[in-house]
Image (spheres, rainbow, N blue to C red):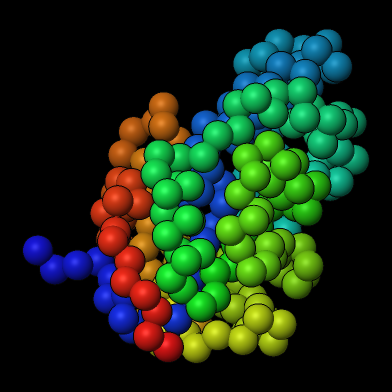
Amino acid sequence: MTPMVNWNEIHTVLLDMDGTLLDLYFDNYFWQHYVTEHYARRNNTSFAEAEVFLKARFAREQGTLNWYCVDYWTDELGLDIAAMKYEIRHLIRPRETTIAFLDTLKRHHAQVLLVTNAHRRSLELKMEETGLGEYFDALVSSHDLHKPKEDPSFWGELAKSHPFDPARTLLIDDSLPVLHSAQRHGIRWLLSIAKPDSRGMPRDTAPFAALHTFDDIMPIPACTA
């Protein structure tokens, strides 16, 4: 079987957070159920009516920085989004084999960056809850660069502060629009996640190969760069 990556040709590893390193169940439950329940209660409406309204409202911002912004949704919905995430933080969990994979990367690769669209407040909560921050050379939020990862120019902005060679870079991300964006920038090695939400169904990620667990691309030899 042809390997998904050639580790000898990879110098930099860029890793998404939600749905890639962490189980997307937390985020799906939070936005689809927890926020809907609180919004319905606050506005004295039914869950079903709140769900219809919120789905349409979220869809208008999908793929933009607003979609990922805690402060934006706090203002728009009249709910303390950051505090609500903290209330159910016990649901934040790494995906299967995440820690073993990160530990191996830390020992063998030159540059490992967490690159997420998550707002800084969400990022900090999840690193506090999981302890994964210690495995990275840097934690980058797209809000720091003022554009989402779906924007192909994001990757050039990222390279200004954390230089990398696209031809020798691996990006693992559960978002297909993000992977297409990185591909347009010239990032060579691109992998998706077959099942970002542990309670969801496997997805078709074509044209990108998908990992079931990080064991699919182990072991990792020492970096030769």
